[in-house]
Length: 104
Image 1: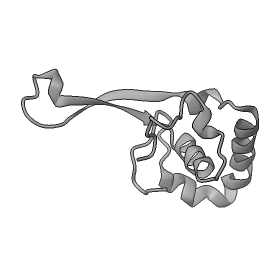
Image 2 (image 1 turned 30 degrees about the horizontal axis):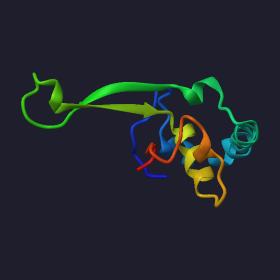
Image 3 (image 1 turned 180 degrees about the vertical axis):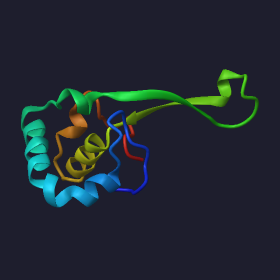
């Protein structure tokens, strides 16, 4: 996972997970496997912050802003891990489908 990306509402970055993986890895893997097996995520993994980012031009025109959703890093990690598997059912979930780009 890319370093120094914007965290979601929990404030935890990918650097946090990389640093504390020896402590968190086993339990987080259990959470991921549970979500994958049961087809749903815990509440904090389903939350995001929608905000507007300025593109260019006049700041007073709405067309010069774009909405982005800041998702929690643990969710992004989960999607990245499970979407790399050949027959991933994650792509069939309503939140993450072939037309949605969570990581790109």
